Length: 120
Length: 112
Image 1 (cartoon, rainbow over the protein chains, first blue to last red):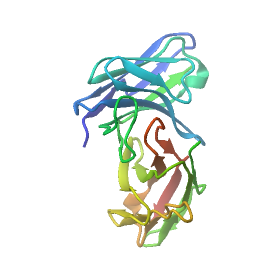
Image 2 (tube, rainbow over the protein chains, first blue to last red; image 1 turned 120 degrees about the vertical axis):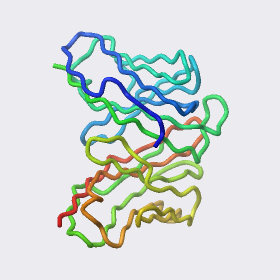
Image 3 (spheres, one colour; image 1 turned 60 degrees about the horizontal axis):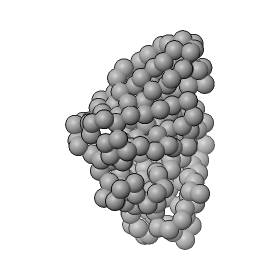
Image 4 (cartoon, rainbow over the protein chains, first blue to last red; image 1 turned 30 degrees about the vertical axis):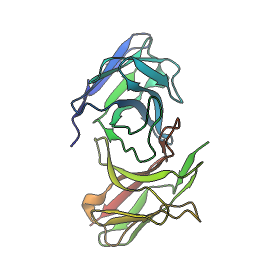
């Protein structure tokens, strides 16, 4: 199994509070992703990183920010949590054979165990 | 843009039944296709993949063939077990600046 951990695994918070989720990998993979999983929507990409300090937005990035100061850690921050951000959050990694922001068509992703976030 | 369409679930089968989960896609270029499986309370795991037309991916008794002419990648298994109960996601990766596109998932429940 790929070495990916997420913390916390469960969190309950109140509307308006800041929340930070952490993804840690031991695989030294270049690409890291944050997804949210909601019924009827499958997985939706929030943000991704293609290297240290290199990040970009996904399809549902509003209300979220990310940071990657080390290869192994990718943080997702909800600056002011809302009830619509109640979800299960997954981190994923891949060792892209592409260059820069580009990925290779054959890249596969490895997922962490997820964080269940409830915003009351 | 890219898209993946999976059959709606849940799918309920008896043990040893034949399984098909349909997946069709729309994509530019020549994407790779994937099936991921998510067991209860866990993250997604890669089940199988195919990187070019007519390739067959297989793993743990599951198979899927990359059909470019019908833009499909249907998942099949000849005899399901209770332990196969999970959510199955079809996905594609067309590389470049595109990111992986996932289907909405199909829940499979296998009853003894």
